[in-house]
Image (cartoon, rainbow, N blue to C red):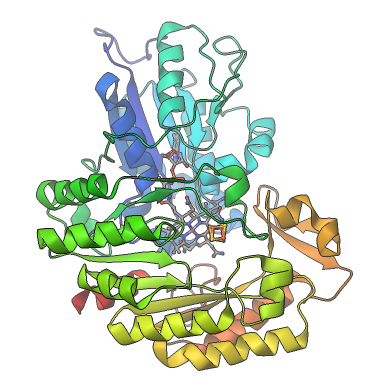
Length: 477
Ligand code: B12
Ligand code: SF4
């Protein structure tokens, strides 16, 4: 391993790894992804997590690329100094749609100032667009796609030893170290889990004192508009007992009683979630938690969820049109059942946020009216109704097989974006900006005093969208 320039007298026995989460992300609590990565490598590295996002106030300062180029040097100088002061051998970045631009800027600066440091990218945005990122940015040494625990360990071993170790999730521009990367080694549901490590976060600085936790990984469904099944795949469910132990650890170690389940769907495995609720109730844990649920929840499960502390659920059928649901979305939701679920959930005392998509391919005025009608029928039962302009998500079934959905052409919204506009042979609302306007109009009609979720940073009234307040309100009850 090449020693750092300013390590004059001693070379550390362990590689020093900085894990960085950059702005601007509307994060109510610490990120779980890099916390898992830290847990996976801390036995053989000196690892420190830098949550720059919270330091810069989450989404508050959201920047477009032009503003970023102008303001970044001053804005991020101190962050870069802090990362370099840690004297890392490797710096890993967690890339999401909302923060990849700042990550690229900071990585480039680090590489310019200290070329010997290895730069690594991981996270969902990496997994979706790594081909473009690796082709374009030579300052990225390694890219880790999908789950990073095993792959990042392997990479550190390789860097340490200077030998190539094959792993299907690692992509390299440093061919001298790793040239052939083959063989898949997905992380399996293990009996003894490694719990995420939150030691480097000051939990009192987050909008809600809350920790993320998860029961399942990947998604059990296969919606046509979603990239997740194709990219992350490998749906697994942890043992409810293991999740309970992690929650108890969090209560004891971090003095936290609020949790956010980061599962794609908290109720994808009914037996497991019921068992977890039973365990929480039996242990008498006084916790409150939030999550995302498939829009079909039985009365029995709702009762258990509420009794065990669930106070907030995203429940999103995506549309009010059964035709769109069946022919285009394939989320396999019955709209009437979804309405009933939302009403029952609210009535039992769990806050509901529902997200609906506007302007899917082939969407007619009649479909749109059904979605608006659906929204009206559930409005009294939702703490917010979010209208999302429809886009084609990279690597989704709709993206890969677009002709099957009567789409003539896909138009990328930005160079490294995951979202595409489309030109359809059979209707839909075009172009994308029109869908944004429509979504904003509906948002303003239906919502409380919050800026539209798609507004870039502050809107003209200096308001900003933040779902953090939804949690703090929900957890009071
Ligand atoms: C919970 C969730 C939400 C919640 C809360 C998110 C939050 N801000 O905390 C809500 C519902 C609000 C939400 C909203 C949105 N979300 Co969301 N969400 C998720 C979900 C279901 C879980 C995320 C999670 O915590 N996963 C568990 C952790 C362990 O996984 P992970 O972070 O990916 O980390 C692993 C790997 O990525 C990798 N890794 C991560 N970082 C690093 C770093 C290094 C160095 C290495 C080596 C590896 C590595 O290893 C980790 C461990 O295995 C994911 C889907 C999913 N199942 O992952 C989507 C997901 C993150 N969301 C996504 C999107 C697009 C959105 C929205 C923009 C949707 C929209 N249309 O508006 C909004 C953004 C809203 C906002 N302002 O934040 C996309 C992101 C795609 C991208 N390119 O970034 C995802 C991946 C879903 C998808 N469709 O594929 N989301
Ligand atoms: S949209 Fe949600 S339920 Fe459908 S595949 Fe994606 S993560 Fe799963």
